[in-house]
Length: 269
Ligand code: NDP
Figure 1 (spheres, rainbow, N blue to C red):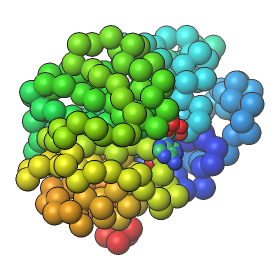
Figure 2 (cartoon, protein in one colour):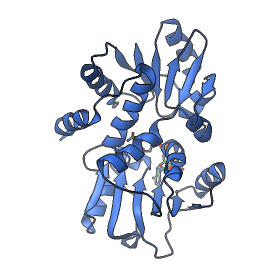
Figure 3 (cartoon, rainbow, N blue to C red):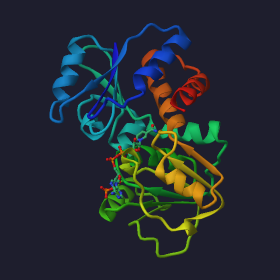
């Protein structure tokens, strides 16, 4: 048995994605979504372990707290200090990993054929998702990464956490007229169908705009298209790829993500 834990959780596509993975790989598993009250994560982990769950996904707002509730962590989990995947090993031993960054990189490279080497990257937002993707982005050797956040202090905190010379932190007031090769929108505004106000000069002719949110049209992508952006994607591919990595951690087999992406794209349109 497996589950995704979050609050809220009703919107989660993870049960559907893992059902499709199980069908594809002929693995037999049950995967549900569980709403966890805000101060009850630890209690819930103990309860599910008692009930012989084999693995969990952890989503908003529990990824940082969950980091402190596992016994062994992957290198990426230690770097991000946040986890989205737990595997229950022998009784009383939990392994934690963070697959968000791998999911994003796989989607960008394999599905959108983007190389990040020497690229100028702008990240809008500095929340849990951004924390999870920065170490994986850095491994791709970009030229520089600017983290721009409404609360500048949080962008600075992430810059200091990862302590890499390619990282800079700022707020959302773009005074300099710089453009970027890749813009990753990672604020939670897309969930409310709202957008931040951005200047058009941050895009050039071949800028790739990516929204981590996975609804078909997001206000950020609509804005980018309106000012002429031709290369863009939502975060559905990332969601599926990070789920595939969790599936691999639990079951040791890799599902066919292309098939699941095609299915979800047609179901969500
Ligand atoms: P968090 O709540 O951790 O962070 C929210 C971010 O949005 C913060 O940087 C916050 O800025 C910013 N923000 C919120 N309101 C505003 C506003 N009015 N104006 C400007 N900025 C604002 O969220 P997550 O990082 O967990 O999630 C962010 C997005 O990423 C969501 O859309 C989520 O669905 C998506 N996501 C997608 C995944 C995928 O697999 N595709 C995986 C994980 C997340 P401040 O610090 O100032 O509050």
